[in-house]
Image (cartoon, rainbow, N blue to C red; front, side, top):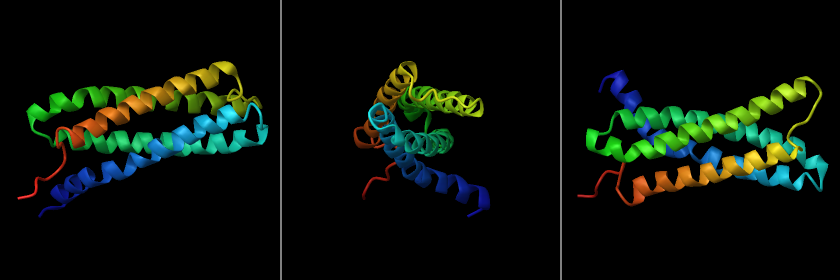
Length: 149
């Protein structure tokens, strides 16, 4: 087995592992940020979990895109809605992260603003729909699953 084949084969197995990061950390971030309206000391943890979740989303998208490239043409059409939603979700949380990062550089905090919190809930809804499409690809269509002989 040559090196490139080994790498591309491994990416197919890494994608499901990486999807756990945005699936776990981004909802926690949104919930903690909403709870920080009552307990302001939670805001820093919400920010850190958003960064981890966003980084995980970027890595999950990269590995998912590489995995989709290896699929037969017929299956790529099934994957396309999931890919589009993954792009939107990743860009959404990346935008929120950049917004907060730039605000922090100016000694401001936008995470506590109503606009940021509403947008983070919208991002969470996008994340849930993206995950539902991904789960459907695996469990309903068997994408990426080797059949048992």
